Length: 256
Image: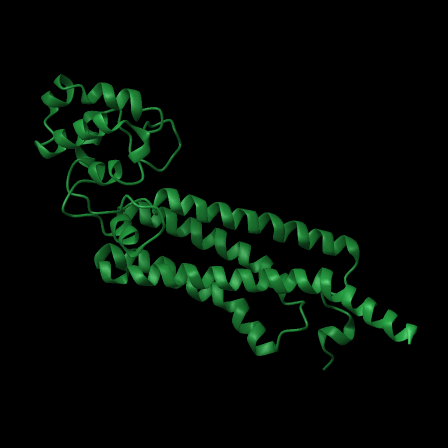
């Protein structure tokens, strides 16, 4: 059986147009991956009120901070910069005093919500966040924080399963044309993102039930990132640096 390299089906020998296509795709996907990391920092990385993703951030996001409410944990975490400290403390005190509807209107909580929150927290925003235009919805989030709901987990899970697996199919397809990686290592790296994608998303659900599974969320996401970086680097190297090295070597032989 002939190999890919003997038939010329490899990254180094592709024409400039196909290399440009592959490079454009890999570059855009890499930028998208970086933006996803930034987005994770803003949605989960501030759950404990500190910069950087930690196990506590994962626990608070999926299991919840069950000693307090979702509103309180968000105001002390990822939403800390969205309102002055005075307004945040007023809302938190209202929650601690029982989240009474009359107090909601009489103490100015409604005005703070209208000024600071409603621009995003409304039914027409299209964002996967609570609607705070009605008191009932605000009161629901003032109850004990139990983390992400099962309905939101189902919605986000199917989006990630379809979207990320589709991205890695093309990244893996390009990487499969590389020749400098042993075949069993290549196969392992190609299948690695799918295995750890399942581990990552399964761990969301398990962490919702038991906070001890939060570590697996970080392990799954980290392993996907490592496999992506490896495939991206090898693919770029074999498309643009390896052919240049071959030309330089042949030129050196001719000069001798």
